[in-house]
Amino acid sequence: SFLVGHLFYIIAFVTDVGFVWSWWGLPLLVYAGFIYWLLHAYLGKMRIPVIFYITTISVMAWQALGRWSIAPGSSVLLAAVGASFFVVSDSVLSFNLFRQKFSAARSIVLTTYWVAQWFIAMSVVV
Image (cartoon, rainbow, N blue to C red; front, side, top):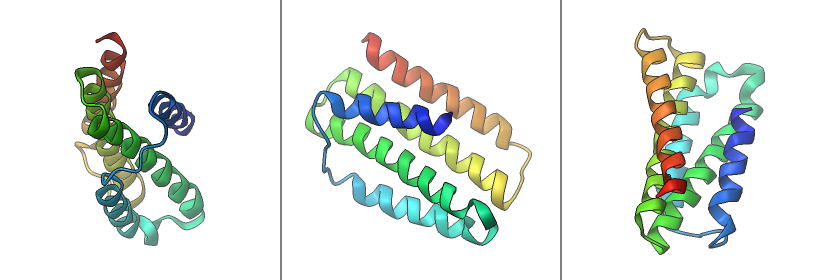
């Protein structure tokens, strides 16, 4: 269900300005590669689904940040910040789930998840 939510966010982010080929794709690609590198030895049968999920959330963040780079404004910035919080949330979640459990993970994941949702929701209101 989270994957579907991110796919809908991608659709929402590209609806008004189209797919944005911004420079933000490069650091997100590097970050996605780093996260995969940290996790790949621990994924087992989940390797392909995790690659697909990492790709999806990276594209979602890329488009949110790309929109902000070509159409700056408060609502676009709020969406970009929200997308960035999703990247943090899902990075911590995946590290905790597949690599190394740690006690603060649940609090970090839930906090960053709800902050991400709040920023994206506020981007519609502003």
